[in-house]
Length: 436
Image (cartoon, rainbow, N blue to C red; front, top):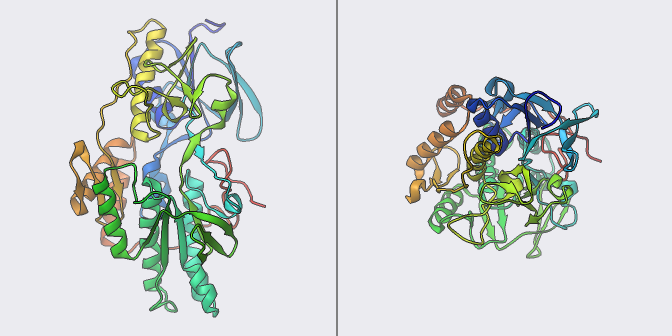
């Protein structure tokens, strides 16, 4: 099993699947060396990112330190860009550009996903993505900056454009970004001395006939009612035909002057998956019910990188959601241990717990165990679910929620990202580079 004294398990990616796999292996104490290769030193709890962008949560609340939570795991900071399956080696690039290689006896691919780009003119150059902390912080600063610049200009057309915000994609992320972004900008407008009487305009676009198309129709309908009451324009069966620095042309021909386009259309598996030259389905690694890659018993995959079969629905593969990734990471850990002689293989089976969608304030929609909830009750369930799911920072998150309920939110640019945006087409959501 290699030259080291004990077998080495290498986990690629510290997202939902990779983190929970590493955590389970730590607790099992199987006597193997566990190496986690990740671009950052934290696990990012993606579902709460819209609250970071909306100024409700401190960004540190959604970043759980890996070294503190994974004792005994060797953390290697870097982006894996090559896997030599014959030599059983992983190649990576660290944050300073230095290349390295790590040999493995067992490998878990949990590389996650990146933005799904569509061939629409101007999207890559002018849209803001939403997959990591840099993007959430940039979007927060950008929204605040637009309102401040709108209040400073004497040009009414420029003021309207800066107070207009377009979100593409009415799934989980897009709906929550529009909900929290609208509340943030509305709060700013109320406090700005030169913007009294002017309303922000938020548009939420999707080619689907309703928001949250992947959920129960009743949840989508309830979310639409909340957003409509607040003044968010739902433009269903509509998308973007072209994006420019001055605005967005919609698929129905309308041109919307705006300085803000947020891209929440969806995700695709990390490009690493395609480079492996292993069998894929819909861009994800083909695995069996034990999350093993066929004909490669030493390689496992889970989360967004894996086309894990849904055993009670033949022919289907699991969706790319955090709930599935968490469960798959835990099962992959158990099966990795079994492949080294600790325990036995067990198939991955998923029992749906339901979904929650946070709409900001005391509004949310949820269907725990199939029961549809809306309003403050759903908001309480949503907060409880997130506190239960995140593997750290619970007390700090609860404190932030409490303070946001009794005090006005602090609205000020942090200046953490700077003037350039985080490019939408960057492969790594955690890398900030200058555009242009």
